[in-house]
Amino acid sequence: MSEFAAAGDMMPDIAMETPDGGSVTPSDFKGQKLVIFFYPKDNTPGCTTEAKDFTALADDFAAAGVALLGVSKDSPKKHLNFIAKHDLKTPLATDAEEGGLSDALGIWTEKSMYGKTYMGMVRTTCLVAPDGRIAQVWNKVKVKGHAAEVLAAAQAL
Image 1 (spheres, rainbow, N blue to C red):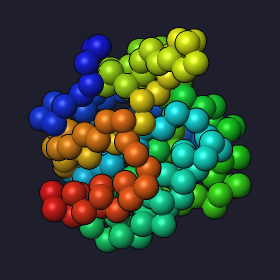
Image 2: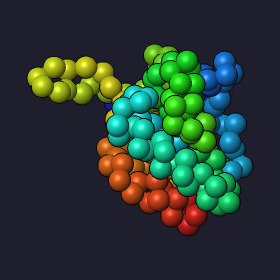
Image 3: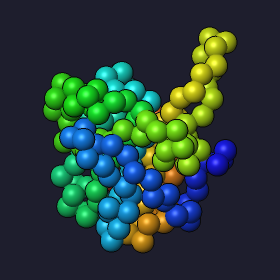
Image 4: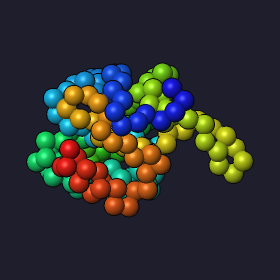
C-alpha cells in the first residue's frame, strides 16, 4: 500500500514484537478501542515527548476504555531502555519486519533530509474502533498537544 491508511479501513492484523520477547497484534485489542502511535525513533526529542505525553494521559485513556500502543522500528532492547529511562507506562512494540504494519499502512516511506533520501517512519496515530476499523488517522503528527487531542477523539468514539 503506497497510500496512507484512512478512516473506515480495517486495521491490518500484523504481529509485532514486544520488549519482553512476546508478540502483539491489533486484533489482540478487538472489542475495545485502541490508539496506536507510530513514531520514528526511541530517545529522540520529539518521540520522547510524544511517548511521555501518552504516558501522562495513560490513566485517562484506560478510564475511557482505550488501549495504547507505541510502535517504531527500534529493537525490543532499545524499547526496554526507552521505557526505563523515561518511566513510560505505554506499551511499545517493534515493527521491524519488512512488510510489517507500518508498511501495510503506508507510513514506512521514503523521506529526505539535507538532500539525502532514506526510509523512515511518518509520525502517525491511528484510533481503532472496537470492531477493528480505523476510526481516525492523524498523519505527519505535530507532537505538542497531540496526545490530548487523541484522548478527546477516543472518548467521543
